[in-house]
Structure formats: structure tokens, C-alpha cells
Length: 213
Image 1 (cartoon, rainbow, N blue to C red):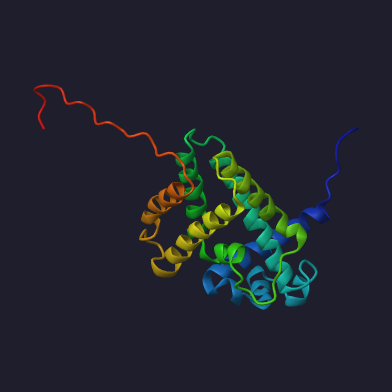
Image 2 (image 1 turned 180 degrees about the vertical axis):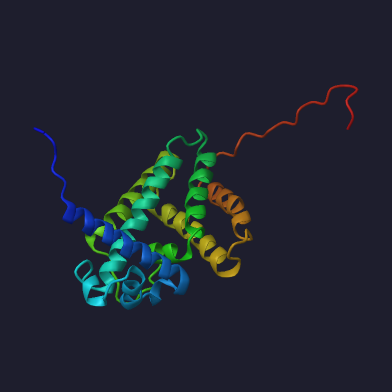
């Protein structure tokens, strides 16, 4: 039919194979650690010979690069959805933002290490893969500025504070909530330090006469 787009089945098959390779790489990273994945094991998992895998990724760092881009793009989409409608009060707003990043990070150790730590010797993301991380960073700076936090040093303290609690949670209480429970307190300490107004006090509901205690 006129106007109908012709499907590129070769490109579709390559995209599907690439997706399968990345899924296998993530599965392996979660099993043996992000720095310990091998192209041989990934190829075996997807049912191909290692030389065939090189037609999709020319090195292990190329696999890491695609994983890095994917992880930050996933967080970018997640954050945009979760922070589309933040509370009006600045302190409540940064509580929401801190919780969104904290929970995303602690949900997946391998992903967090790739995104936020220099765990893999010799790996540096390409500019293309790094682009989602830059957008997230810029959005974070703009977000804190919109809440009255405009000093870059304060932003650096903010990301160090949240990142430190994430690292402690993953290292010392994986699957638990020891450091997760400290997040609100830590954010309030930061908010106090940068001069954010406190949240309005909630007054207890007055008990009606005659109702039991």
C-alpha cells in the first residue's frame, strides 16, 4: 500500500539480539559482580559463539557503555515520572527527591556501582552514554536551585550525603533498612544547614469529650 513503511527485519533482528546480550550482561553482573562479567559467559548465555558477539559489541567496555547509558536513561525516566509533581514546601520537595534516588540506587547493587562508582578499571563512558547522566545532574542542580539551594558546594554536599547513605546501606545492610531509616534525618540536617524553613507543625486532633483514650 502507498505510504506504508517497509520493515527492516535485519535491523529488528540485530536490535533484538543486542537486547538479549544486554539482558544477559545485567543478569551476569547481578550474579558475579559488575566488574566480573565476561563476553564468553554472555555469549554462552545467549547461545552464540564469542566471535559472533563482537559483531554487536566490539569489546567488553562497549557492553559496559551500553549498560551505563541504559541505567542512567532508566533513572532519568523514573525521576521525571516520580518528581513531576513534588510538594510545594522546599523541605518536603527535597525529601521526595532524595528518597527517589536512594530507593532506585539500593534496588540494584550492580547498576548502582556502574552508574555511580569507578568499579571497573579502565572504563570511561563515551560522551553519548554519559549524556543521560549529564542531563540528570543538570536537572538536579536546577531542582535544588528551585528550592533555594543555589551554591554548587551545597549541591556537592547533597549528592555526597545521599550517595554515602546508599553506599552504607548496600555495604552493611543489603536488603534491610538500617540506613534507609536515617535518610529523612540526614536530609533534615542538610535542610537546616542551608537555611530551609521547617515543615509546618501538625497539631494533634482535639479529642471529643466522652471518647475513650
